[in-house]
Image (cartoon, rainbow, N blue to C red; front, side, top):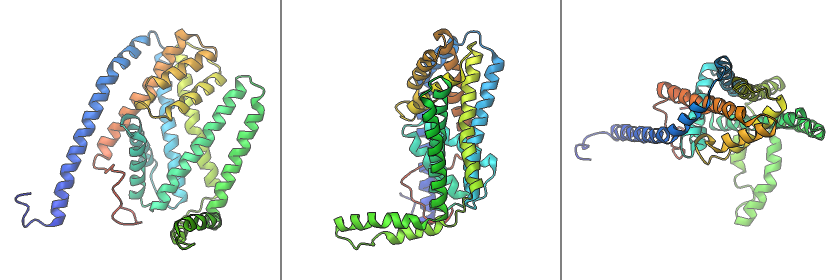
Length: 353
């Protein structure tokens, strides 16, 4: 650029970074504005369908959703504390809100959400390995406990054949917990399992048999610092389950707000179906797809369509736009200078930012 002569490379880089942040911020505002315009008719129709709802139960539904977000923040904090990474609960929960807003609002949101959480975890002092481990463990525990919710819903819905499924899910969850515990306390087992894979892959490529094993050893040396005791693992598992329980309570309270009287089993099945569908990010927040799935499963569980639809509207207004708006507010206040580029490598190697 003209006029850059005599300016240090560091100053030029900072100038370009400010320009890029303004461009990224402007693009983000444009994307969100377009989504608001596109979603406005749906939100207006949803609001008009509410009719005569109980606002006390709406308030209870909002409270339950806030407890769900807080529980996931505690899950994250429990895992990081076990890895000797101190973090305050309010900071962990703030990251959960902001990451959720990124995930449900942006194209490719889950990637941006994961990158954002990874970078914030690094800022708290976690190494790359510990930050990645925390993300993986959170996902594993969340998936395992959601499976328990699903099978419990099938059992409560009256299917006797699901008793065996419930027992199987509990056994698999215990095996998962004990397996994770074993690998964390004895990471050398990973070397034993990884060596034959590396030998085979290197043989195909014509490389030395142990090529890449040094990096595995470096990763394991960091994992050995993660002392995930049984109480910590059980506590993390509880918060993963509490996250779903509170979210189910949000849906159940939304049903009561609409004047419905749903069965617990029906709500659990509808909730699980909605979460499975929402894992496929076709539209922001699974708009339309999740709503249709929830409505259809609630009707199949015995709710009249005239109450199932407003119940889903209440739940979705709370769990999608309301929570996303809260997340963007948190992001704007606390994290607006965060770099979300997933291809931007940490210049400081394996230490915290």
